[in-house]
Length: 439
Ligand SMILES: Cc1cc2nc3c(=O)[nH]c(=O)nc-3n(C[C@H](O)[C@H](O)[C@H](O)COP(=O)(O)OP(=O)(O)OC[C@H]3O[C@@H](n4cnc5c(N)ncnc54)[C@H](O)[C@@H]3O)c2cc1C
Image (tube, rainbow, N blue to C red; front, top):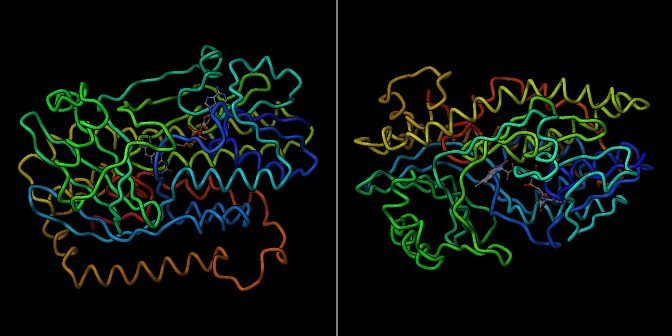
């Protein structure tokens, strides 16, 4: 069987890895429009769930990704001179390091990965039995077959920009600064030993009032550095990522009524997007890859049935996840109302309970839980939990990887594992990590 994956992001590369592990004779090519090593964005956050999934499916790439990642611990909310400190932990990795690790592993397994090879129309891949469309939120192929997939794309209201900084954060940081038209805020988290990621967001009105629609790259960065100088500790923001300056964007909410059309299947952001404030997009791209390969294994001689199975199992799950993520996006689009007149602790509480499914306990209770002794105890509990999870998935095992052989490719199902109400797993700010409970 011959498969072509369009896009060397997490979805395309991980599909190639899992498929090659499941069927070593499978002929797999990954085509990407960008040059090797060029990618957009900075760090992405992961929870323990992501490493559980990576270790269960391919220990070799899991170990490389784990080595490239950093751990974050605790969350700070800075508002109007006040700071709230909460517990919580997770991991983060530079997108570039993640993709390098996955690409290296795919090549090692015998996958062909070709860069500078944009695919404009899948009919040019007529000799492929299966075309996996993993070319991201702006998918060219999805647009070509928009009617067949039943595609809807809605654009979020808030402009945001994905930046780096040489400030080394240790945990999640949320900092909001007032302007005459509303707030502008920064979500920050560590991403390697030397750099952190900052996503800056505000309403359109504030963006224009600050002149961010007209300022050039340097001027715009300078303004943001000044606004957030306290939390950045006077250090710099970095716009350029692998040669490209970051641009202000608006989130694209992508949904599709079907993910398959003939032998073409959509996965990852091409199929569904989730707002960056939940930090799930990469995890969901990896889950899609694992689930698609599971379906192919379950229907080894019937590709249409395999694609139908993948579509029927995964899409309803993703609808619920997307709906929870939309709630988070809406919260930040109305953040001016939620932040106005609040202390840092009240703002942190409002963010942590922005999921309406959560019981709204009182803010005093929340505040008590943030006092140092309670926080230290929670941190200790979470550290123990983190070590237990890492040991359970085999991160600390003394047996060398080559003696263990490959782990089962797709068991247990990440869809089943992730099927609790997704919003409950959400941390307060951007990024996947353990959820600091508001209780
Ligand atoms: C600001 C921000 C913060 C985020 N933070 C997190 C986070 O903390 N945690 C998390 O899990 N997720 C996060 N995400 C989401 C995450 O980045 C995406 O969900 C994830 O990258 C989707 O993976 P993908 O493989 O589907 O698509 P992509 O990663 O977008 O990869 C698509 C690939 O396709 C290639 N391509 C595009 N067009 C073509 C073409 N015509 N032909 C060939 N190749 C093509 C591109 O070059 C690219 O390499 C964040 C996103 C944003 C915007």
